[in-house]
Length: 269
Image 1: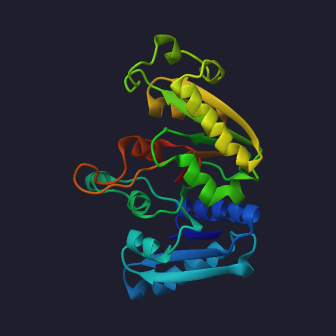
Image 2 (image 1 turned 180 degrees about the vertical axis):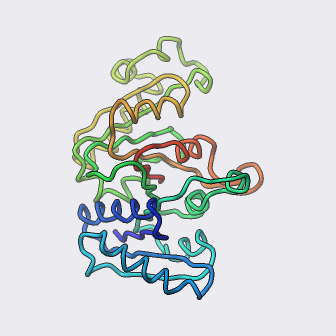
Image 3 (image 1 turned 135 degrees about the horizontal axis):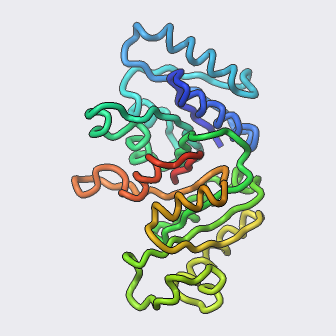
């Protein structure tokens, strides 16, 4: 698996570089450091950024560097040519009115790339506990995850599949007790949600790691954020559905909220 790390020399980018190095030690894939500038006059500064970034990686002698001129998101997308890779990014929080109105680089990249994008947040530590937030939407997040990132996920200690049941979005026919039930209760009674959980566990069993299923009840983003804290996960995985047109300019609202507020590494598939 190829690891593409975008850096501009900022503290957020340094976090992405170190996180990319953590992944490289797990899967031993080739690493490319990418820096994007607007004008050729910035080349000396960018070359210095790339040189320093290499020193943050465990195997600097095996790291390739790439320097591009253009718009940051466009050049990252151009550099990522296939699905057999992972893009690692950090991003500064938006400032000012323009920063709040315009979509950040991460959203632009996620919306146009079919490969996974890992957003560096919080502390860099080994991926021992991973939370996968499955929505039940098609195409399945788990199918994409296993297809693209099985070599990485096989090395974690514990993987949790989380479903959030919201009364607002509950399907017709969902009984009241189901909106309070645990994952085990839903699977035992073979409810719609329980069958989905069992299917998730069957999919994840292909990875041969310790598995568990969890259900939380309430507002989706709030419950995922709470589970992040309670479970103290090292990595959180969500799905983002790409779209076009005015109805969905970039990511769906739930994915966008999680991207903006997650306090730990967030893998968007």
